[in-house]
Amino acid sequence: MAEWHSVAPGIHQRRYDPFDISIVVIEGDDGVLLVDTRAEPGEGEALRDDVRERFDRPVRWIVNTHAHFDHTFGNQVFGPDTATDAAIHGHENIAIHFAEHEEPRLAAWRADPTREPGRHWHDVRLTPPTHPVGTPTTLDLGGRIVDLLPQPPAHTDTDLVVFAPAERVWILGDLVEESGPPMYGSGSFPLQWPGVLAALADEMAPRDLVIPGHGRVVDRTFVSRQAGQLRLVADRLRAAHDDGLTAVEALARHHDWPIPLDFLVSAVERAYVQLDQTSPST
Ligand SMILES: [Zn+2]
Image 1 (cartoon, helix red, strand yellow):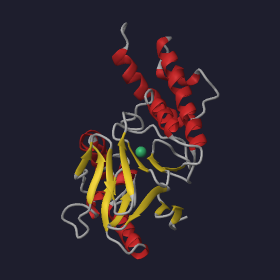
Image 2 (cartoon, protein in one colour):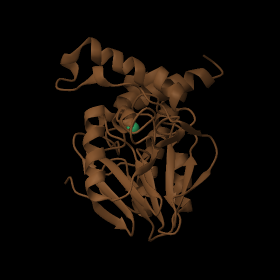
Image 3 (spheres, helix red, strand yellow):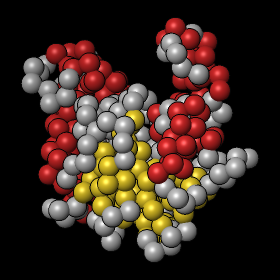
Image 4 (cartoon, protein in one colour):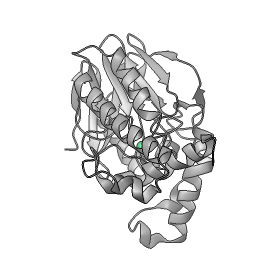
């Protein structure tokens, strides 16, 4: 699994364990752009060495698809005060998301190492983007253009899509997942996510290539289908809330969820918090 796979000329995906995370390299004349940095500094260092071995140009740009630890905890290996000193691009909300979600997560793991044995959480220094992105931004890598498209709240409030317009390749982070179900993790927006993903699918052409945050390359049909699954979940949770059902009752109401039930526990929690806030009667 862990080999560079050429998705399009100059664009390469590598799937790393643990987490089957997608790392993407985009080559330019002036250097390479690396999408996501793995889950801890040691993994980031291994990634840096793998990139150095395979590509003959320096890593000039890092892009984070979102704030989650498995995509960003290697940032410190490439960022300020390192020999690489790459420009780290990511959604403008990442620093806030780090403070609200990843910092407490890290503190809990450090306090109880049995929860994640074999990991090196004490080595992690949260490294937010040096270049926060709030509006669509184009990077010129030298002979290749890449668009950074920050998204409204969906999988998180920090999702950013990378699009290579000439090659018609989309890098979606965890907005779409192939090797596992879509993950409603910390800071997800289950009610908004389907609309964001459907809008992206609308922008895609049938032959466009889509690299998910976890798993093999997919296409527009796959993205649309996953948006539909997320839509069904959102509609059912909204209806259950309207009918006064508890979170447990909401999940028990149906036996044909498109996503495994244990993945929906955080979905209903997050959706209910949001619906309670907007509900006029309660
Ligand atoms: Zn994620």
